Length: 375
Image (cartoon, rainbow, N blue to C red):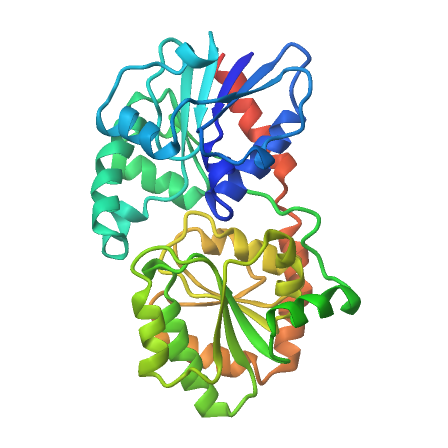
């Protein structure tokens, strides 16, 4: 097979879809048959450090344009420059980040990570929502096959795009082996580096309205006043869009003494950061997958999350779930868990067992099977 993959997200994004693309592509490259050939397409402004190690059968092709101008050219101006003009002939082209560029002859598949811009448009930046609401349906309509991160996202895609169920498959994410319970000696340097409090609840994701950090701040403050527990709330993640209300909520709630923002955390520090937390809180309004939840579970950190979209199929009975948008239930769960050591221990024990079901190798095998079926 001659396979082309758009590697822009892996080359440009530190978290989220970037981590998904890097993990999945690295695993699928290990499955290649001797006759397979893969071309990874980079935008001009992509980081070469994100590229896999050179080996036989793998080619890195850097595009002459930045990601921004490439998006304008292909998805706003609809310029008909086929990817094969850059890569040479392909049998399959995979677009793992929503948008499928022009393709001349290759079979095509596109990955839909979530459909929040259609299901929860109130949480998206207006300009981005309008662009995605036009460009993603066009990409899906042109694709021979569609991939979704979870069964919840698969059902959303089938319903919203009126797709036949057989043309939509689930290829989820995996948890890297480095996400595991760590010894105290490995945790201490990260605590010191970020100035972390002794007892804290961790929230981690890009700062945007859909992640519901403002609701978490309100619920955490209510639980802290109710019980008097000593925990702080630590929120890690880079600024996304419409994040101003999150910081404003700290001021409104007078929570500055116990709410701390770390900004974007280096990927190598994440296992220790999870391990230092007494509880991982993920109160999202909607998720296509929810990789941080699995990573926290793999590290033996108890997880509290909402019961929305993909999260129930990820956590099973190994996490505490509360109804989406119910801040009173969230506050009650925080108060209950942080004053009940036995409940935290039970979740910490169940988490790694559940997370072990999700591996990059299994995800890559599903993806490679789809590639083969398209041939």
